[in-house]
Length: 312
Length: 300
Image 1: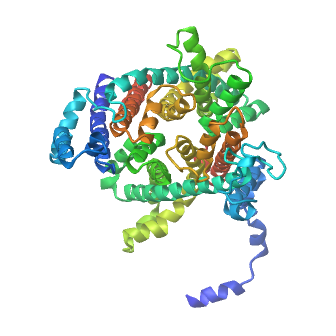
Image 2 (image 1 turned 45 degrees about the vertical axis):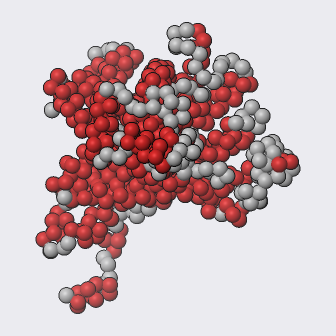
Image 3 (image 1 turned 90 degrees about the horizontal axis):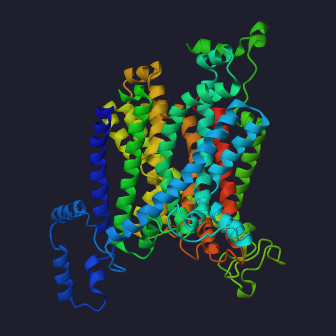
């Protein structure tokens, strides 16, 4: 188990290095000159040259990368061109809200999806199964921004039930909880469909297996057969698939944050790109990539912990 | 040899043989239209593609023609069945042209990413020495979502259709590579590939003539399913402002524009969003049905 975790960790190192390298090269191919941007439109050539020297832009590329990498290890991702705030500081302010939004989305959508998938598998082919399958396909086809806009327009604006813009504090406060409800419903809503479909397939596979028949034969109630014998075994592939999808939920979070003006990393990244704030864009992309690598690593190790057959 | 082949058509088949012949299996299309959901999805897909292709003919106005007097006109206003947007442009025209642009973006991404992915998949299946390296690379690409590629490419090239198409292509490559590799490996384990090798055929010829045609159904099913997903992702990137730029009509960008007027004129955001939803739903349903009809092994 420990060996497997270490192995996966070692495999993640080249990927991490690759992400940093791509992040660095990203700034090299950007059409504008960072020194020019920093110097402003009225700077003389001498000033620009001085700034270029100051920023290390006159050195060879590999030296620049070494300096960049060293600064990154020290947690220095540069300064925003737009408001002069250190990139790391902005990231520190936005990572929390993004994690909060993902947590709030997953906490209700995963159990709902698993329950719907199990019900569909149990009553396979019946009306309820068809309804759930239809719902799941539709849920997987709806753009997250559409669901968000509908919620804002109907629940937020027409019914005036819940706030629909920004974050009002940590999730455990009453205002914070209310503010996160609509974004979490929108983001989680697009996640139920895939979870329900995966669970349905996995439970269907297990329902026909011998030990489930044995459980029935020994007179166990249907509820116990499904939850204790079928679902339990079906959950191993479901957990992995969910884990792999969580990374992609982070992609949906970028859109959800923009729709609900949620102050997370995704919204920061989009804003930085649209305003050509390259250091900020670079920093947010590196941090988001790191997030994906960490999620995949955790899922991989968890999977091995759940299913010893996967360790080999 | 030639005598037997010319003689064969003239030979009268035995009546017993004719009776024993199994009933003709319905073709893919036949099996597809027997399923009501699949038939409806197919009809809608034809409708959506037709509407996009014929946008210049079907549209009542030019997509950039605006009439500020009609700004934010509600659906049902005389002459404006679906209303007008904030610049007073006809929503029917904008939606048809938006659909055209969205489908074009999706098609470009599926063709580019799918083409490169298929080449990688065939290479990995055929040349076992590079298999491990190529597939690890695909695994790494697969661990990043399309939205992130979109952010990175928009940062490099600046927001625009090019960035979105490239991002969606990059995100499609590893998925197609996996599908094609799996399908190609199954075909390559068959005897006739070894026979083809024994006759001295070149690798390219074996892949193109003997392996690829037998992987086509898997490729086709995946492409249909992926087309829906690519449209969903592409419109999300455009919604974020990273894709098509105003005044270009594109469904995601139109929804983003409508977001600013959500409380006064919700139809500006809702109509293009519904168009995206229906298009993605149609291709997802069609992909599922095609998979069941063409490639039951892939059924999930």
